[in-house]
Amino acid sequence: DVSPNELAAEGHLDRGVRRAIALGMNPVDAIRAASLLPARRLRRRNLGAIAPGFSADIIVLNDLSTFNVHLTVASGNIVARDGAMVKPAHSAIQPPAGATHSVHLASTHASDFVPGWLNSAEVPIITERGKGMRRLKQHEEFANWRTDPDLALVTVWHRHGHNANTFTTLIAGTGLREGALASTYAHDCHNLIVIGRDAADMATAANALIASGGGYVAVASGEVRALAALPVGGILAEKPVAELAQDFDAFVEAARIQGVNNDPITLLSSLPLPVSPGFRPTDMGLVDVAKQKFVKKG
Image (tube, rainbow, N blue to C red; front, side, top):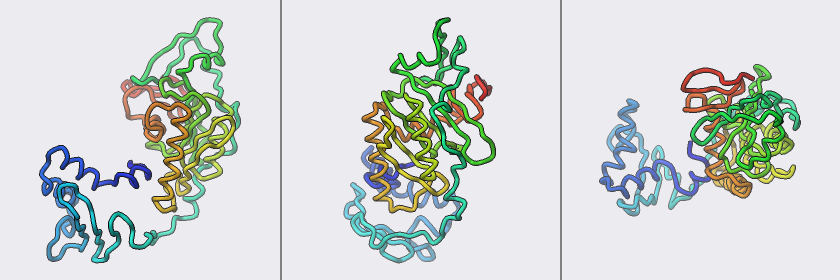
């Protein structure tokens, strides 16, 4: 779950090795922990070491203590030098046609994001601590939730074409001040999740991902401010990592401008995961994970 912008800026396993060394681990032990030991655990006897009979996957370092990689060799071929690919990498397998049409939803409208059940006397709210209940005054109506700047709507839509499930509730503590954010990269079902302060912007965000085949999008005042498209299954892209990283940086910046406190990628990706503690929104309803029961069904 390393996003493309983090991957391009900081690396992946190499970042872990550098951090381990910086925290005091012996460099040889850190490298072994990222190569030979996991290969043994996976019973890949031809990986993880430089020895006869092993695959010629080798890195050449400029400096051991800082783990600065000079050359990367894969299967005996130099594929990267000083942090840059020698030639572009292309997958040998093309995604099946169905994978690029995985968001099976019709266009949404603002009214789709305004559930009547939130007029009930006691409203479950997803909070930073996981869950909470807020009792509305007798004369309060659903529309009044917007008077609290700490609240936003969150909607999860089933997008895989098996049913028309959708559910909306309230969330507190995201920091979102305006517009909407949406993604199809949402563990584990990878349904469409939309968070917003404005129902019309939520519809615009959902429709942008329906049109693009999935990804991450930020919308404000009816305008798409940033879109990182993931058209393959709604979770992958065919762009080079460097280009996709720029799209992700633009999305993160747009979310920051709209007020989101923390990493918006983590927020959208992990919020609908119904095995994490607290209240979790799913396309079937709001789940109290600890009790393994629905707080409210869709």
